[in-house]
Length: 64
Image (tube, rainbow, N blue to C red):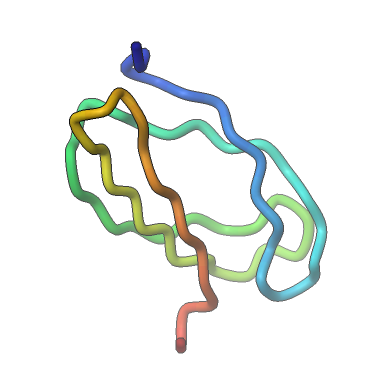
């Protein structure tokens, strides 16, 4: 069962560094921008929460 907030690790599409993020699973489909903790460039997040108590997270550069 998903918690309202889930921890995940992503790789920055700009600098390639890994860092932890918190995903808000209370919203089924969301898109937002968050800055990389390492290089401070804007990362576009896409989160889809499905009915199987799981979520799909994709990240990409702001201009993709």
